[in-house]
Length: 347
Image 1 (cartoon, rainbow, N blue to C red):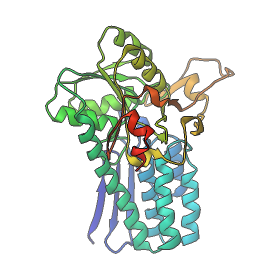
Image 2: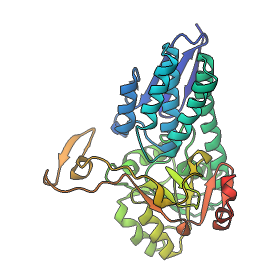
Image 3: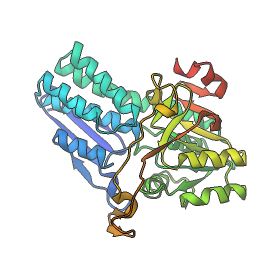
C-alpha cells in the first residue's frame, strides 16, 4: 500500500493513501547531541509528555507536532468529541508558545465546521507544509541583512530542530552561509537546559558553519571586544507592539546589544505574532520545575549541585521590549519599529 510521508530534521509522519494507517516518529531532543533516538508516538498522553519534557520543542514545531497528533488520532477512528478533547489537552500543554494555539485553532475549525477524516488530515499536512514555506521565506528575507565577516551571536536553538523547515533565526544564518557569505556564529550555551550547547552546535556542525560555543555570561565581554557584529534570535510569541517572548536570557542579549550598539534581530513566522496581545506584559511566562536549576541531566545521567531544599526561580522565557529590536524578520518581510508602530506587520 502506498504511503505518504512528511519528514523534517526532527519528525517523520507517514500515512496510507486510504487513511487507515499512520506512523508518527519524533526525534528525542533531550538526548542530543550524543544519541539520536526516534520515539514512536502512540498516544495522546505520550504526546503531551513529549511536548512538556522538551523532547520536541521550538514554537513552530510544537504547533506542527500537535496538529499531526490530531491527524493520527483521527486516522485511529477517534470520534469528533474525542478529537476536540485531545485538541484542548494539546492546546494547554505549554502556555507561552502562541504557534501551538494558532495551529490547534486551525485544527479546531476543521473539527467544528468541516469535520471529516480527510479534512482533519489535510489540515495537519497543510500546517506542516506551510511551516516549511514560512521558514524558506524568512531565511531569504533575513539573509540579506548579513555580509561577509559578520560574527553573529544567537541564543537557544532556532533551526531545523525547532521547525518543520530550515528554522527561524538559525535558518537565516544557514541561508546566509549557503549564499557564500563568510560568517562565524557565537552560540550561547542557553542555561539551564543548554539548547544552544547541545542542539545549535549539533545543527551548525551538520551545516558546516563555523561556530564558537560560549556560556551565556560571556556575550557582553565579547561585544566589548568588538567580536560580535550582529545578534539574531527566534521567538515564541510577538505582541502587537513588537515586544516578544523568547528563551530566558534573550532579554540580556538585547540589553547588551543595545548598550554596545549592535543590531539585534528577531526572526519568526507570522504564526508567532499574536495580534490579540497588546504588549509583552500580557504574555504568560511558563514556570518550569526546580530540578532544571538545582542540577543538570542528560545522556550522562543526573548531576545535583545545589541543596535540594533551595528556593528556585525558573522561568522558561523572558520578554524583550520592542525598543531593543533593530528589525523583525518575518516570512512576510523585514519590519522596522516604524512599521510595527503603524501596525504593518500585523497585516
